[in-house]
Image (tube, rainbow, N blue to C red; front, side, top):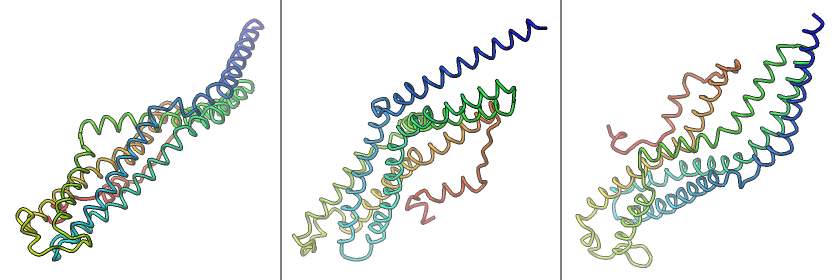
Length: 277
């Protein structure tokens, strides 16, 4: 019996020493590496590329909207107004991108300088006092720290896969907007007023401009929808999936409101043909 107790004490001592080593390694080495922007260079570059795409789309849609609004009559006004409305979606996407760029380094630092060390301390106390509740709590804290660290990189990889599947080209949307803007601008004077018989220079007149504007709007809506999904929805879904996985392993639970899917779908922009139907 005495030998068994000695073996158990030795195991406890070894476990405590290993946990202390993990704690020191996490605080002094891994946290600095995880918080270094160079470690996340690829993720940050991908976010910068997304930010550049959003800014290009915003500028092009604003110019196209102004050009369509300048066409005589009210036929192109609804399309121009809808293009202006898309600016709010671009702003939301841009805010999310900036937030992800800030968090990508901070979450890693927080996970390995605070949460993982806290989990080690709780586990050490749990081992020394033989408290199962503390051991379980340590597992939950550690799992939360790893989820916090992995959420953005994993969501970026999933987003890249979705973007490849849909193959939505931002450059194509920008070129379409530039083409329609230049075509309308060529028929107006320096003050933006349409010249006499200017509409005859545009193929099929106002009808042709309206059709091009509607096609451009639908293209933009599709692009914005994919961007919202890849930049906003996927990180949420990845977070929920990771917490669900942690729940299976450590008992961490998450409650998602039943109305969440409907709320997300209501925030996505709709194609002009869908609104008419």
